[in-house]
Length: 214
Image: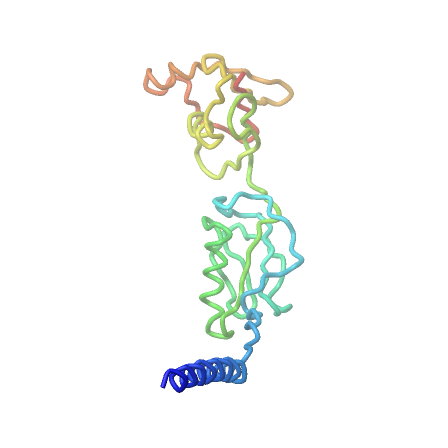
């Protein structure tokens, strides 16, 4: 009786091993390898495009030069100059308001208009040349450099655009340098008086003005 029980147990073990092996083969036979999906060409961006000369929050203005690109559509890829009325001309959609928009906002406007003619057009807009009058903020500010003067801008607003002072700045000794023909006018500004005395020294800037923060 014990021998029969041992034989039965051995046969049960062998049967279970055979089932396990057969199961693995069945799983292997039924395995289907699926290739990863190829990226849609509609999601690609142009490989060759000019660099942007403006920040992402720059507001486009008259006389600025823009590079407009529509993926895989050479007829809609072109350079345009913003007209004095703030408009640009784009094939198919004709006149588009560009002034006052960022490059990303303008790209979205063109995209919406092109949907009437194209399926999911991929539009990019790059500012390749800024032709607005400029002012300059130099010295111990976080982001020194030129800034476009599109409308009225005060000294305080310009300092804000430049990111404020560094830890080494001397806010009491700011200079506003303004060209007057062949001469220069230098105005001294104390930042703390500007803040405390209801805007004393918070001049409206003119094209070409330079603010120097020592």
